[in-house]
Amino acid sequence: MERAGVVVIGGGAAGLAALRALRQAGCDALLLEARARLGGRIHTLHPDGWPAPVELGAEFIHGAPAELSRLAVETGGSECEDWTWRDGKLLPAAEFGGDVWAALEGMAAIRPPAPDRSFAAYLAALPGLSEAAQQAAGAYIEGYEAADPERISVYSLNRERAAGGPQEAGPRRPRAGFDALVRELASDGRVLLDAVVEAVEWQPGRVRIAARHRGEELRVEARAAVVTLPLALLQSDAVKFAPPLDAKRPALQRLAMGGALRVTLRLREPLWREVRDDTGRRLEALGFLFGFEPEAGHFPTWWTHPCAAQITGWAAGRHAWAMAGWPQDRILERALADLALRLRLPSARLAAAVLGAHTHDWQADPFAGGGYSYAGVGGLDAAAQLAAPLDGTLFFAGEATDAQGEHATLQGAVRSGRRAAAEALAALP
Ligand SMILES: Cc1cc2nc3c(=O)[nH]c(=O)nc-3n(C[C@H](O)[C@H](O)[C@H](O)COP(=O)(O)OP(=O)(O)OC[C@H]3O[C@@H](n4cnc5c(N)ncnc54)[C@H](O)[C@@H]3O)c2cc1C
Image (cartoon, rainbow, N blue to C red; front, side):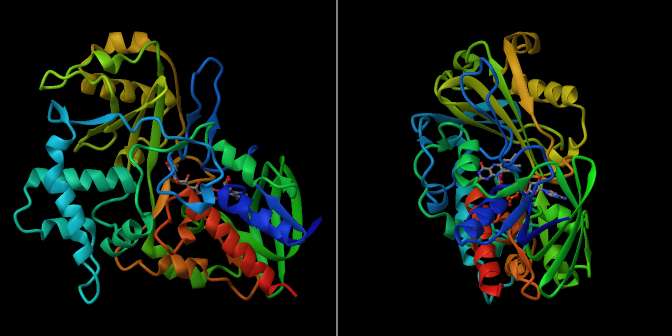
């Protein structure tokens, strides 16, 4: 039996931030993490011989959040240009953009007393928007939010856009990989890896946890718990709470887990540089290559690494869910076919240029259950309800509990961990 003042469940960004805040306040805290590593949906690889780190989870810093301000940032790529591939046409992204950006800007008008609605319903009601622009805007939201356009709330999209603040030109990433954040957040606190929490029995002021630690039964007793389980695991009752979390049901039903899957390829050379678009221009400075794909189970979007012959394929929303559980070979085969089509390269030529590939199926991952969260129609206040403590004993953190529009980002996760730790400290005698 282990004893602690506060037990933190989950060692992703939220759990690590909570542990650190608890430790700094002198609290005896213990963190239980199911995997053999910390970081959760931050999963950076540094494969031998690869020129740049490979992210299997989070890669980009969205906005300029204080929570990530200590990371050394790679801003290379601001000189990059974006292209769009659609119906066999390859053109500079700006050629397709106009109507789509206007549709996104127009969302700001949907605010009370106008009722909340899905992004798809919003688009369908826009006068004069062509079907092609509707599809493009839907694909954009699916790709960026990992969400089903038929389900995601326009109110929540507006809040997220307001929270984002000004975005610097070009994508920003931690230079050394996002695992630098894991190292920054990790504290000297007690951490047990390979500790899968199975059940949480709780009453005011007391929590008893049943877990499996390296295959052995483990019991932990604490006064309080900070729960940072990903949304999908709370929704599926992957951990049995007794009494059950009935108070959270309405919030859990109004939030959704988006699907996200990425494949990063290391190439012998940056093959895209020799490709020409329909206007005859070379994709010399390719940044993002956006794509539209009506059929689920594809990698519509690709982006290059600014300093390396590495290219990443991105499948979000229904594309990622359609490939959940596929063997890695099949995922890679699909990614290569999609890239060859977009770059107009013979498949054999592309395959011969691939020196390595990495991917991770977050949808089939029992400790993630998907990519990142979003709010469904009518779910604007659901994150705050999910975050609310229960009986001064269970405290909730994790990206999905961020109620300020950062429910799908690392800054939201870190912020939530700090908030839950502060709530627990205030409640402890
Ligand atoms: C493919 C992908 C790309 C992304 N891209 C970006 C991006 O570019 N920028 C950005 O800001 N965000 C991005 N995100 C989102 C970001 O990664 C998440 O918002 C953030 O990492 C969530 O942190 P968390 O601590 O809330 O959850 P997690 O990191 O999931 O942490 C939860 C932890 O709980 C553990 N756990 C689960 N079950 C148990 C159990 N039974 N017992 C004990 N422990 C358990 C898990 O192993 C995990 O470590 C991306 C996510 C994905 C998947």
